[in-house]
Length: 165
Image 1 (cartoon, rainbow, N blue to C red):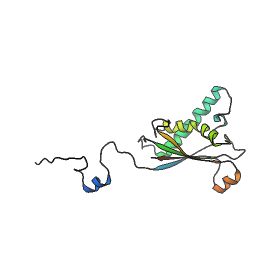
Image 2 (image 1 turned 180 degrees about the vertical axis):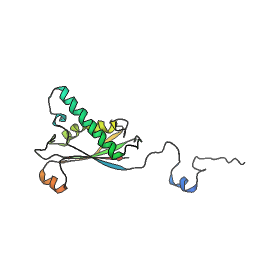
Image 3 (image 1 turned 30 degrees about the horizontal axis):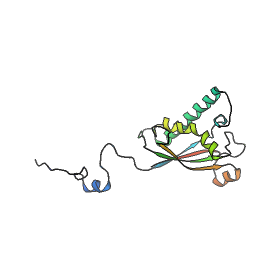
Image 4 (image 1 turned 90 degrees about the horizontal axis):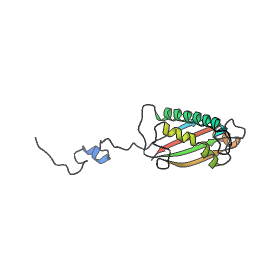
């Protein structure tokens, strides 16, 4: 039996694995990917401008958070449980006037209304937390007219695209 001294961890690997950057260890970062989630518009109670009693607002937050978590788990895969180190969120918020949910008139209010959906992202096990250490905002598109909605060929709702870094 010959003992060969390996100077680097990759030296003992076959050539195709040594050159590809895959070490075979347990601490591999997952490859970059993305997935999209379709959600209904958040309830009107999730508007940052609503002044309501805390109990109905808490029920609305809990409901939307659970819906978001289930839809994210379904899109990401129920069996895949890898926690991602960092993700970027792209949002398309489609809310023409007269829509059933919260109609946001500017991007900041749309982001605030989606706080429960981001909590659902953490509840689904995609990231450890919804803090800026793990989640960053990408593009935000706010569609507020029926003409824009018809051009896109979509109905009212929210599309959240999650991209890994």
